[in-house]
Image (cartoon, rainbow, N blue to C red):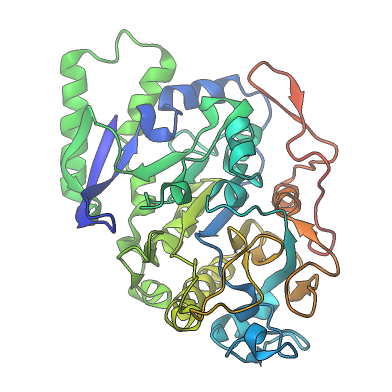
Length: 444
């Protein structure tokens, strides 16, 4: 196993931990590099031109009535204190705390009638399309499905990378399920669990820009392997795995310090400390996601912030929504600037929506009946708002769309039609990934 240590920091649960990158063994969510390469060797289909998906998960569920579906004709105890603003697309308005998104609405699409949530705080719905209990039973995450269908773009880059950090509320950061597809299609993860038996000694994520130090450490690791004759008795896939362990391409993709200062400044810093019992609001992870897909990763999932505003909803929105506005628009603009907007899809969403009625603590409570989502890129049709909700924002009115309809759309834009195409499970049995769901016609 390869371990590259990051900066030691204190998390919201009071535990001091060190974040690090682990590659190999359990570090890949059950996918070892040997498994990954062996699976690639077994794959017979030709790898298509590189397309990818970035999923931005907002733990806790942001208030749709204060972001993308304001209800100005509703009573004050429902509509809240924010006003809508015009966007670059005539006829579409969004909340005043999202001015950057408003300016680039021609590059975004809103779904205002998102359904299919349950009253639970957990990430599986947003990374697989299935709630916690069903995902645990056997349904794979979208990234695992993508890894199964298309495999890696090249030998040194895993197809699926999960950047969702460990959270105090554990269901926010459940490792992505590979389900009936098998452990070979798990995600490469950044986390701090488990022990390492191979290290790039002396190299941290913060010091990867020191190319000489990195190369010296890699050379030392290679010499250790040679001395132990660790490769000689292994099969070809294992030898290839060691080559990946001593390749810096994947690690370099995570090193955002290699980006020009102007790009890093556009993304901004965000907030390093976790918000509530959720994720940090580090904007570097959005930039890292772009670098990863550009390097060849097919799916990246990341978590951002904490949006469970049972109290002080409006004060929290004022604090956090401008940061989300900056991070999302920086990512989308970056994809356009680099010519990736037709190949990389982005979806931003949370666990569910929030109650229409504001509670006694000036908060909004859980509301799984309807939510909103933002999409961008992927060659999808942008500059539109899809679906409507009732006058109080409590239920989908026109065009209810399920989380799994969105997943079907993302796969469709990568070249896989869930209505007619199947993959196979671990026993080579054909299986539909999202039966009963189909691509959203307004987007494809």
